[in-house]
Length: 593
Image (cartoon, rainbow, N blue to C red):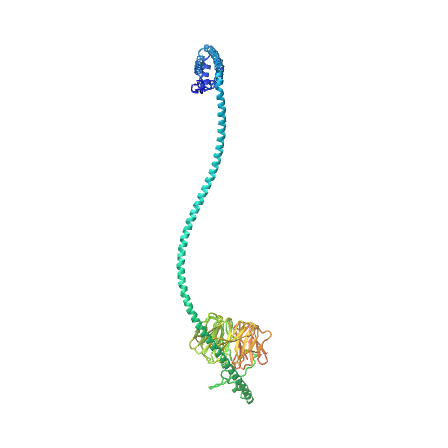
């Protein structure tokens, strides 16, 4: 039995040994206290017995049947004693004797088995130390395992987080790949469409290239034609200029002959014959003569007429007549008897303000330039509108009729065009385009040249047939407001916003006189001045209401007329030599003799 581990299953329950403190001991103690006449006196005796038994048995490490039997017997005896004590006091004495006997026997057995116990305990102690060391080593290994496990756990957490991140990135990449695949499909479709478009464009380009080659060939042919035409045109211009020079020489000869004739006729008292003219050169015709008297210097206001509401912009006299025609802001044309100052006729039908007037040489038609972008042609006898000439896109500010034929009319508008009209047909037959607005214009005496005055201050001459610019001169530093042709057609009068009145030779466009006056200020862009019928005087209105009369030969003021209370816009001299008429911004017309 010695040498084997103690069979603890045979060891009595610790509840019995520890009964004073266990639940069983507590219950038993209560019963003993309630039944024993000695009360608690016997209870301390059990504690030494427990201590002795525990001391004796603490060193046992192998099975001992004898000790086991003894111990079980003692346990049973103690239990019996504990039960018996509740009945009799004698049980205590028996327990004491039993304990004494048990103690003696135990001492004897302990002395007999002490060497065996020591021999057995040594290897067990050494083995326990080895097991303790192993346990410590295992504990260290366990701690290391725990540490390794914690590190692995941390790494696992990190790896799990990285795995989740990688998974999210993978999902993003997959979605991006899906989008890229979709875009790739769309791009391929677009590329195919662009390829088809490119093929179509290439075909169209090839077609255009072939057409371009054809157009280049045509352009070269047209260029050659243009060069030939330009050379021919240049030759014609040279011939035309030569012819003009010859005509000018012949005209100079005719003028010298005319002047000599006038001098001789003045001496002989036949002045009336010298004033007959045709086209301003010979001054006579086969059917009869156009008579005029020498112009007199006006000084007295004969009539003061309240003609138009809002202002009067244009006045003129009929040819070889004393009848005065006026147009104003009230959209009417009025005809007056200049000798009496009475109204004889009113023409209606204009849809805008009248800015300029002219009349045919047969005195049958009156033409008005209007702010409604149109021209209106009235028949004087019936008083009705004969034509409404449309084509301008801005207000028409100037108009004139040919001095050779009553068929052709010129008009200038603020759309930067000059138009030539045929009154018999009632429509435009030519249009001239320029870069500066035209304020005034007139026909030359032969009806082949147009004189125009522009906002840039230049005087320009145009060929009426071709519409080409023949000549140009800087007449004023500011805008030209008026152009008047002398009766003989050799001199043109221009007035400008620089308050100067210049006389130009029509043949050379050289200045042959400049008229100015202190206090003379041009009132508007359409202030009209005029030349007397005998080509000796110039009349022009001023912004202060005055009218200045200059002598052309002396280039000096011969008279200043004052009757108007507002700026004078236009002046007109009767072809009979008198009277002179003027109109102002308030619509007042004055006649002067």
